[in-house]
Length: 307
Image (cartoon, rainbow, N blue to C red; front, side, top):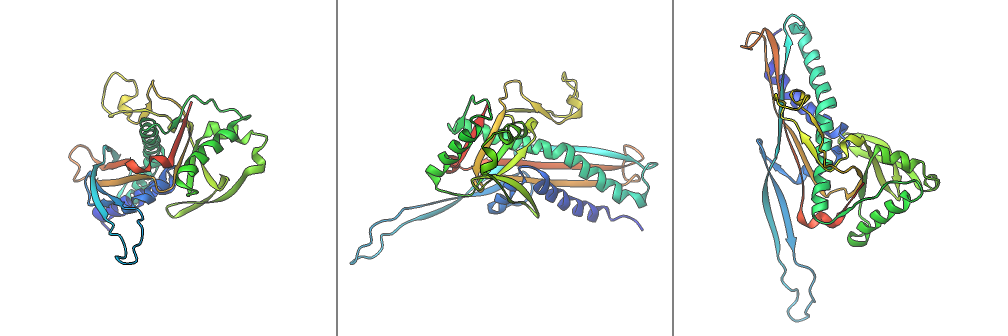
């Protein structure tokens, strides 16, 4: 029975978007995108809400009139990334194509796309926080004082915003130092943390979930290759690497609803060997839009700690 490539592409596209939310260490940030309007392409609209504070009630005139303003700010998804792959017709017949294609795209996204999206998001948060003066720099993690430093940063946010739900994203290398602290066993607990449809057990500090992130993704700046031939030896392989000027990020503490992350598999195109003009092969086109934003009034709810 001939494969309905359009229907398969549509289903695959939905599954790939779910995979990012579930498997990216930053996937929980996408839950904040429910406030965002997305109509396809590379633009989204983000709501900005402002309102007046309390006034005195007057027994004769009643309530003081207040105002509420809702504006929609248009943002562009600056990360427009893609790749095309070919599966030779002699290696994959029509009956095996669906399973093979799903496996290829899932593995590509797990090993190549998700690490890059994570890296972009953490570096974007760090860069924006540093620009706004919300970063603690030049701290070399040490088991003797790491617990004190963490609590200082947590309570800096609480002091301004109140005891709101926070998330602590921490470099794996720093997490290993934290686990080695003599006092940590007394204060660390476990709790449930949800990313999309997946719920996992994580360590918590004073009720704040700790999300451990591979250290290679926790840098303040990255170079994202264009995948074309150039002077860089690995440029044609695409992907990313830490910029030479990057600082290692120890941890990022932020309110759960602060960072608005969006990733959309904008297009999956599938061409069978008879349609593909370039080769006798199945051709898979993958295109991903993604970005992250923090509204100006949210920076008091973020602390970035770098080395």
